Length: 365
Image (cartoon, rainbow, N blue to C red):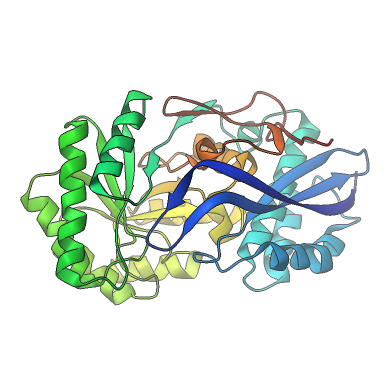
């Protein structure tokens, strides 16, 4: 059975609450959906989220890459040759990780649908659910405390707190972030895990100042994610060497070469693997294996995207596992979606669909 066509769909889904980080403020998840259709008319979906400040990818760029290059390249090929097709996609173009991830996931989704099994089973797993953290958007201490109490009441046990103010006065920023964490710990008590995500918003000196302050105050933070700009691996290693709290590399690691360099420099204790950063499920599995081989902790994250991208990431976690609770709450933020089916949230658990593949259809199909 051959691939008949590859088509794209632009989608936008509103958030119920603005999503604010040190890098951006967003009110919608804007993505390009890629649909790979076989000669029987079955289609598999993948997603390329538009995240200017992280990947630099746009809907227009992903659309051009898929429609002008990747789609024509795949048309007519065997729909069941997932490994060969995915490898072809990875080598067809430089960068464009979002577009490659969307096509890669769509190929896997289609293959799973053709076999009549959920994507997690196609990947070799049997779990039907995975836990997730939930993010508290950047804000005042009062707003963070209110949001944290709401999330804990709703059943979340791991809270990810957005901190970091790029360009802010070093001492003032450190004091403000420390005050936020102190207020949160007092509000949620000792049994809730707190993890911090600076989204590259600190200098190395700021990072050490804040993290040491947290340690000295006994505020019990699980980890700190990407404290410094992604290209400053020396700074990341400098921070990791001077604090006891584990450091998680996110934007610093897109692909294998990045991870090798982090490992070589001992720049971080864990790595956050995201499909839209590395190019899809195939590259993500390689990163997870490489991290495990070098005793580096792992979790799988998502961009602010729909249940297509999050569903693929959750299926990967269910099949391969991670050492820390993964960051799969993006779909939870959606007030509505142009998609039907797929994952669902219950308290702090992401439930995978029992239907084939990702279990997703477009509203107009």
